[in-house]
Image (cartoon, rainbow, N blue to C red; front, top):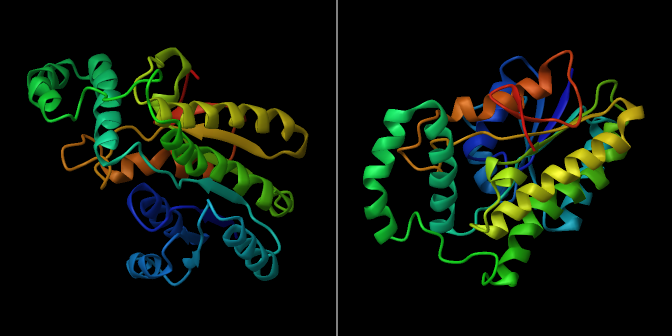
Amino acid sequence: MKIVLVTGGNRGIGLEICRQLDKPGFTVIMGSRDYQKGTAAARTLSERVIVKQLDVTVEESMQNLFDIVKTDFGKLDVLINNAGIGASHTGEVKTILSEAKKTLDSNFPAASRMLHKVAPSLRKAGLLAPAKGAADISLMRVKQLMETNFYGAWRMVQIFLPLILQSENGRIINMSSGMGELKSLTGAYPGYSLSKSSLNALTIMLSNELSETGIKVNAMCPGWVRTDMGGPNAPREVSEGADTAVWLATVDQLPTGKFFRDRKEIDW
């Protein structure tokens, strides 16, 4: 049976990933920075889901979990680096709306026109136009975003790689965003965007470095999803946002070093 570790698994897309992987009977380890919130979230899942305290910004927390997984299972088949933060509560909304607009322009023109109509009100509320760009954002805030979204995932890979190497079909899945696509970078939401484009670059590096081991390393974008971050008006169900991560964790044949949305490869 596959052993899967989901960071930030106690809410939103992470919780839904745990739910979808729980149904076929996988052993799911839900990493939660707040253990009590994790146990509360896991009450909706089966007893196969194991809740463990995990803060991806604290190396001791990660090492403690590594020791537990090593002792109890001796391997890790799938690491899903889902834990992440947005630029701020307002910045999260900005990021989501900006990414949603790009998707709507391409696929749902009527919905895109509606977004354009409400854009002036959103700008007045400070929810659409970014307050800071790459030229003037606080680098301290950028460091905070990078610490969780980028270095957190990198640390997880470095610490858990010995256990992933013990798997017959090891996989690493990085939760990225369309805001990290190099072709779309504009200077808006620079800290968040940089953390995701850096995570994409790390995905490529690791996929090439680990290619001879058989470990598959890929990144994915969930799109605009109705979560605490996405808000109630997001067009996608949380099940849709989690679907590609679950697919990457379970599909038999899989490439490595790719970026996916809705199970389809997209540009870096």
